[in-house]
Length: 151
Image (tube, rainbow, N blue to C red; front, side, top):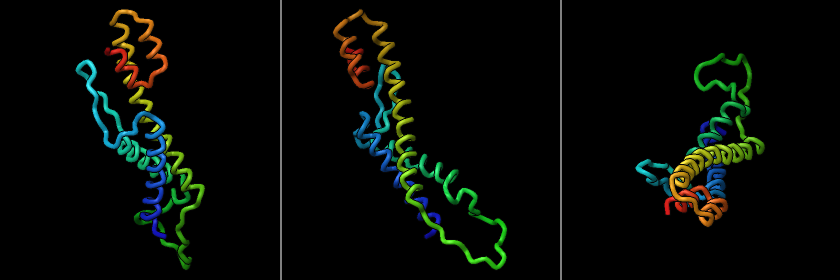
């Protein structure tokens, strides 16, 4: 099997991890979008953003640590009288790509959530104290917490 095709398989496996992360977080919407809070934009990746980030992350990981990390793409020494080896993709490399994809997308989601929570805390700190809002924020997702603080 050709190396570029294997890289596509690894990207797809990582992209599956991105879909899993998007569905587990509050990024279940398709396209990325920007929410404006206090005249500042917060980018939310959606499923497509998660798919792209996780696919790239898994491809990078596989390229760095996979079975062909030292494989010459261009140039390199010519084997003398050796039969070329078959290029393949192991099961562990493929499922590892899904894991790295989830991790890469999770990192992205955590960065977005951190921005949302920072905004929610800033808004809540500037407003009057409300025990009911505080209780709702404690149980809310980061985006919901920001919306509750803005009410």
